[in-house]
Image 1: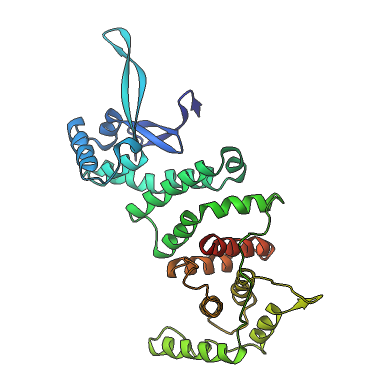
Image 2: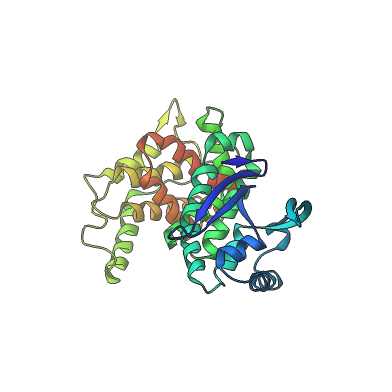
Length: 331
């Protein structure tokens, strides 16, 4: 439900002993000191001490997590307007992780699932709202989600890698939105290709990777076994021309298609994501863009996972995503 202060959702304790209104505004939630004391079943002085520690140690920035609003209260039979401090989700969870109580544990579980899910699904990737609110608000929402999830260790390593890609390249999601609405042009500042991947050399690189993985027990004998020269076909397609012009006319476009085709077309019996990532890096290195790309190990893992899980109908979207990530870091 909503009121003039924004949307309100209700937190109910296990067993239904008490209810708490949680205000949603500026893409986070807000509670007062009194509400936090009720929530965690601790005296206000205890909550206040935790907050002082949080701000004095620099764990959170006070100006970014505290808001002051005039609130009407009933005192002695009359209504009095007072300025009340409200604390956002970052502050609430930071206090919650310090409070040693059963209620604190219940709230942490609830906050970790319901509130994050609400913010993530209800705002951060809602394209209509992104279009209305703009890039700056989206980046703030992504930053909030990333910071809160990582600070409280609420995601796996793979999840953190995906968050890193989304947070670091938030501007690219705006480009993808424009593409989805047929308003996205191909990225500028692309680099002309200088070197193709040699099929024989790629085979040697894949074998070296396989030997290393086998020695560490991280691959099977099926790893890197090519299906009927499918990789050779992919590499040949990257160098196709039409009317004397290359179909894929930039390093970024070739690298994006190389990574996508190896992962989605499964040219190998096993290891397509890892081999795709290897060839992607080799191709960038051959064209002197590896050091400039800015895509680290976790970022590459996340890209591979996104491509693997994507719908084939989203191919153009994924290609433009990879190209924009590369152009955005090599320009």
